[in-house]
Figure (cartoon, rainbow, N blue to C red):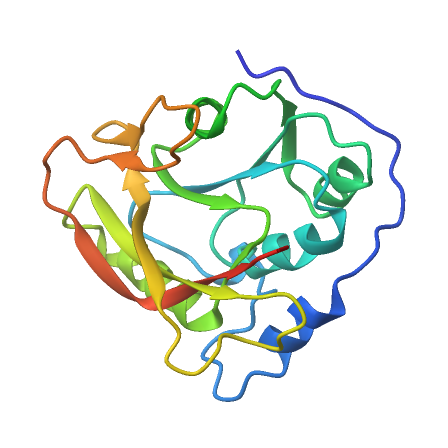
Length: 212
């Protein structure tokens, strides 16, 4: 069901504002570009799923941040006409094309493309912090006790170097076992259906770099 899309590789543009926020951050517990081979987990394997369209300027940072978590990164592209696909393939992601039918269907398609049942589901303009990477690694090593976990998602607005002081946040299930919960099949809402199962809360944050 997941048809792979191939493109000629082009050197991508970088979003320095996004990179500076993470790579200059003090007291980081783990480099976001650590190889997955350097972290050996005895627990379940994890796939990272990312939906994307025309995100070449931000996709590099999103992908580099999760390389320490998995050797299975799935990028589902809905028809980019920039370098998004080339960026994803250069950084080792498996890239699939799926025409856009809405947020929920796109997220569910990405779940189907994953090699592993445990999924971290992201958008291309979201970046996991090093603290969150370390927390997820520890959780997957010991084995998750619940079917899913909520992540706090902080928003960084355009022309801002980082989240504002006392920034509010969304709190959604993004790390989960797809056999026990999945994203809703809604074209306008990209939220998970927990099926009334108890979920946990992670302390690390996911940062959303808004484009508006």
